[in-house]
Length: 250
Ligand SMILES: Cc1cc2nc3c(=O)[nH]c(=O)nc-3n(C[C@H](O)[C@H](O)[C@H](O)COP(=O)(O)O)c2cc1C
Image (cartoon, rainbow, N blue to C red; front, side, top):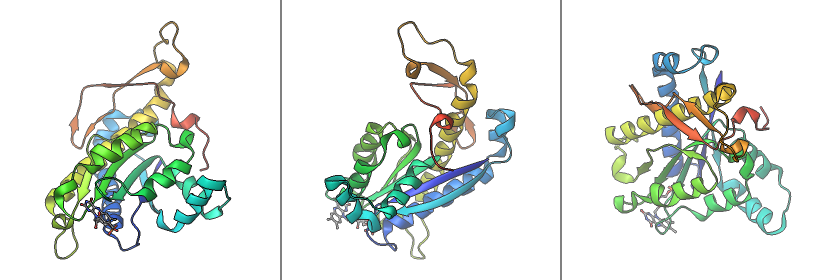
């Protein structure tokens, strides 16, 4: 089965530090998927195990900035913006990377998310990541981007990633610490994708909803959640909609 991981880069230039971090995280996802066959076999039901591959893409937000503002203010149509939003909504997992501007995410990221279709983003597994001019704002992904994505009901991986100039080596490769963190976040993202698909598969076996609750509040037990190379106790996720039941273009 193909896992589509889409990185959203809110940098202003294709050669930006933000794009570089987005590329690193996508490569980390590809590497994690190659490394994890036994773990996937262990956690996934038979028809999902073994054949997964990952397809990655980067959506640069800068080229659709004007269209997004027009959409927000007047509802103006834009095929380019729709294509970008379609890629976000059709992803199995998102890597959201923003430059730090004045101690927070960029206005461009917020603008595009404000015009995105919330129902298609809901429950999408995601990594939060950010770049900055120094290490002063390393908490921006956790303190600013995470609440933003949580408000949109994305499933955000516990590990966030922040990169400033000291996190890159002279040849442009990440420091070992940054590479490790990217690998950890990628492993968590793929585990969340497995949970997401497990919810769809295991739905029939879910316990009956408590009296008075709606179908969205049903609690589904899950067993696939963990860091690379370490199984964790079974996790429980409540109130989610299997992505397989959401309409999106393939
Ligand atoms: C308007 C503006 C505000 C910024 N504010 C911060 C900040 O508060 N903290 C920080 O660490 N870097 C800040 N920076 C630096 C950028 O976050 C940093 O250079 C980032 O890596 C740029 O990403 P890019 O190369 O993708 O554009 C700011 C840059 C600009 C242009």
